[in-house]
Length: 409
Image (cartoon, rainbow, N blue to C red; front, side, top):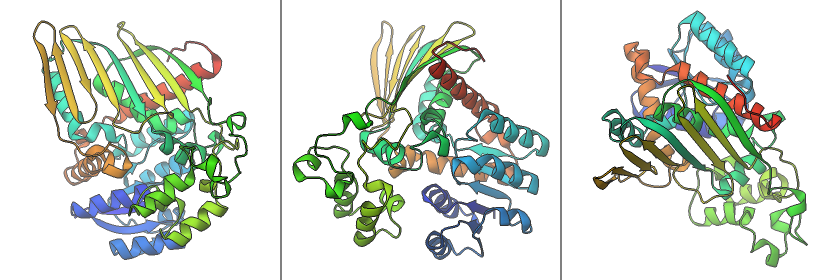
């Protein structure tokens, strides 16, 4: 039986622990500074050891074969290096780290220690990804020449995570592209592997700014005049309280208040950041961004990451020498030149967000990690080198966007 240590008892740590236990693993220890989270985790998973500070895990004897790193972004590098040197294999939540120097440090530690590292690029681990990749391997569109990819974050999801939430300020977390879409750039490498020669990017913070604040809007949604609040799609009352009334108790409500009760939600919306107007100017990350890649052999790819969008599955269009393939997480539409269209329904439920386990990607990731640990086969995981390459492209895209230039790796 594989034993795991979970660092971070929030949403991601909880989800990975849930899947790991269902697959037969034992959660041997957990670390989190929040007493209420720690207590709930101990009760849910019958954990033997608990730590208020994740660094105490490094001081304790080896508690398992693997560790789940679901800590805030800026702790990833320190934790990953320390855990690998201690003897743990890792399931590492994205991003690997918020700076390129730290990503390199983690990569060097992996090389030095020989540990297995599964980066949580969950898009690769879905049934949809396997079906799409299978078609490409069969030559369904011939040689892939160009890829267009859309990440529709969802208007309320963007407001929750990137205007009010933990990733709203780059200096406290990481750039929007890294926090949300590094695994979309990784997805491009999954769909169309190869070396990238040039990177360009455009975008920024356009809408969630003080000058766009409606007249007479209050600083908190619960204090907003009804005629203003009712017309705002980002209203905390709509996003959180109406979700509670529909019976929802998981993400994103458990991020706003924990335990999730009506009283706790009201208190959080009256006192905390999740009840604030989205136009106060307390966020600085981009709300839309375009990334363009030119490969060394002349092929091209592009990514649109859109905060102002309807939440749904990501969409990918693949153009090849023999046809065109469109995928949206549920449907694959293959058009072969001169042969017509074929539609495949994968019968995937929901929209592929965290609420649905990323279309099966969360479960697939944990399953692959546990199997890799049990069998000692790193080939069951995404190549770590490609995860690092995706991070490198993300940092280059940010350099290009900020500098208004095309950059080369």
